Image (tube, rainbow, N blue to C red; front, side, top):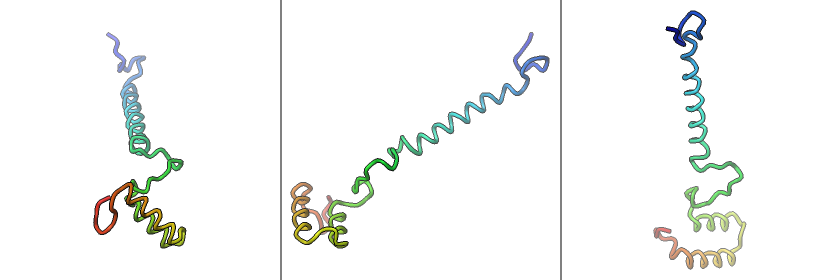
Length: 95
């Protein structure tokens, strides 16, 4: 009876490497998918949501005011809008 792993004219023990190669390809593909797509990182073209980065909207507003990007009137106007939409922010209250 002839077998695939027969030394006489068959592929020999090298046939065992093909499943290992396919296993390495599958493990590599799963690793790449887990590090990119499945974690939600679509790439640098996706906009960054400040809340997902751990920064609350009130903190972003305060940082922009402190850096001079917006003036005091703009700060108070936006703060009132944030309080309208999210409730009272600040003094230890959760957003």
